Image (cartoon, rainbow, N blue to C red; front, side, top):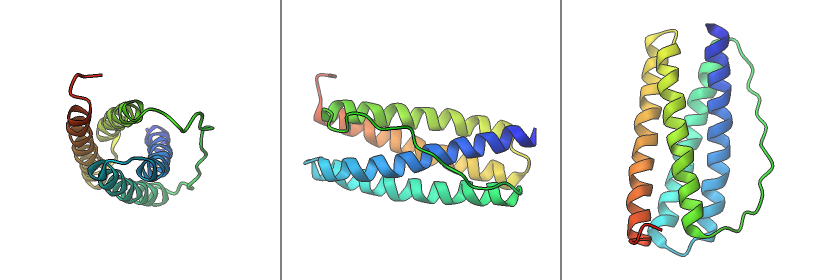
Length: 138
């Protein structure tokens, strides 16, 4: 069980670091000021998430490691960028819900529950922005 939670924490850490990078990168590339501000805000929040996950890993006696998958074709249509962020937020929500099930103590439950709430907020906000920018759905 401890190995399952450690693997989940490491996966979450990878997810958060990739999100930090992509949100900041995409913030520089978008013209819409609301979306730019939200991408920067979300990047800061993902940094906090990474720190929280790192603290749990260290508390359990693990080591922090991360690697990135090669990024391809960074120049993408804005709608695709938003859709990819929406998909990543949904995946993070599922991961952290599973973390709640595997949690070893209340502190972990609280951490994962907070991450779920934050990622759900990102999902709702991105969905609202997507609908505003692409009212025809796509």
